[in-house]
Length: 359
Image (cartoon, rainbow, N blue to C red; front, side):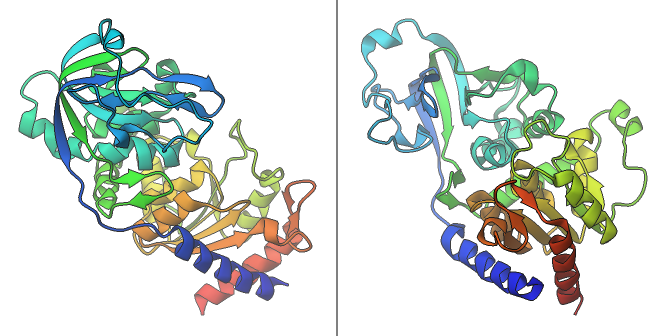
């Protein structure tokens, strides 16, 4: 069984790369839009939302839509009614940042996808106060909660976005001059190689403690371990694998250090990801921390579903990945009814896998 599962995992990994390996080049531009309108975010139905950017003539800029609407999805009008513009809050100039998420994969490949401009923009244009950045907030976004997630807060700060220049489109805006950068990534469709530059910039900025207090409170007192298992067993939204705490014991027995990233400062997370030679994880947003791993790192993912964003990260960051399709093996490693991984089968599989990469 273990060797069969290893072969099936290799085939599944190749399938993911062929299906979701959407890293490629296309022209990405910065547009200057005079008298632009940014309409507020609304959520008329579960999973559906409106909110977009309109040009000088009040015409919809379609690339500001997160996804092309389905037939049953309320859509933003192609032309913004003049009556809608009357009460908009005026902003002299701003940058459009897209949609702001508190989910790491979405944050990296959607929120940060337009912030490539911010790597060079401040020293080229910002002579006084930081230029405001307007985001459409995702349904789960809340500024009060935002401060409790330092990886998001510090990532935005590394891209010159802080509380004082962050504007949420929970109201309509009229912007005299809007800097509109096209995104380097379109969700589940496309990733530009220059996203690697954005991530490299984040790594450089985040690996330094941002305050003296952060340096003193670092929980990583020794060198980063070569093998880590990134766990979400302490995370309140752990829904993928019901017995992840048991998996921790299996990985620990195979020489992995168990990491709970939500308990660590951003600079410690970066140190761990940059120091590891092998990172294991179940699928989910915590696995997207592999975006911060050094190139060539091995990754072992326990998949409960197809993972397009994870595959894009692996190709972009040149990781040596292996995906284990748990749900495709209900008679072996996966307990479908209980949503659990069978620990004895996992232990045997790890023996085979670790032997294969040591050869």
